[in-house]
Length: 164
Image (cartoon, rainbow, N blue to C red):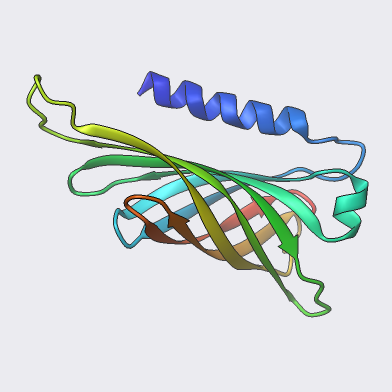
C-alpha cells in the first residue's frame, strides 16, 4: 500500500506543479465511483488550466485517482485528461474529454508461486456536468469509459473545492 500512496502523491504533485497559479484556479475534488467491472470506490481529482490561450477556448486538464473495492481483490486507476468545458448560461455546465489511463489490479489469496496482478495503460473518454457552485463547493457527476483490456464504465459523483 505504501507504493500506491507514493504513486498517488507523486502524480498529484506533478499535476500541481504543472498548473500555473497566476493564470487560474486549481480545483481539488473528492468523489465516490461505481464501476461496472469493479463495484464501488472512492477517488480524488484535480482540475487545472493548461495556459490562458487554452482556458479561453474552454480547455482544461483533469487528473483523477480512483480506488475500487471489488470482491476479488483491489483495483486502482489514474487518469490524465484533456477536457472541453461547453459554454452554458444555466446552472449546469457540461463537459467532455478524453485522455490516458493506468490501471492496476490484484487478486486476494493468490498462491505465492503465481503472479495474480496486472497493470494496463489505456485510453478513456468522459463526459459530465458541474452544477452551480454553492459557495466554494462545486458538485459534479461524470461518466468515464476506459478503453483497454478489462474496459470499464465508471460513474462518479462528488464535489470540487475552490472557485471554478
